[in-house]
Length: 188
Image (spheres, rainbow, N blue to C red):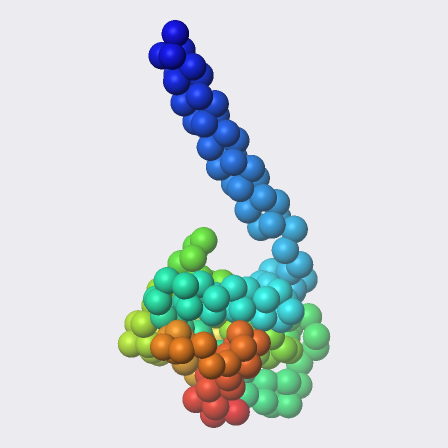
């Protein structure tokens, strides 16, 4: 008799575990489908990215794994190129296509931070790996985004976040500092 009670308890526990996993998967799918995206590039918006970076900092504090960010900027892009808005938009989409190929689907996240600035967060990527990807992205942009009279100069800054040994700063301050370091390294 106690066998039946034990088996029923085990079945109930398994079914609750499966229901919880399905609920979490459904929530993740809903989140992915309802994230506000930049209409031109189909990348995350700045506000969404800042929230996700806070999550990455908290995760790094918990698990101890570093992550890196790449800050990509098209220096004086609008000022140097006197083109119609539709052509400028096409060029920006071409730039985004250059780095979408280098990010890991479902792992790395990319956002349009400003008119001509982009940010890529790369969880689990050490600084050296991020620097390699940054060099590749910069080369791809200069090689692939070309037209007569067009000047596209990309600068790429890289920064790595490693959780400090003690809790010293708030997550928001750490995210701001991380972006500041990457921006400084990009030459802005």
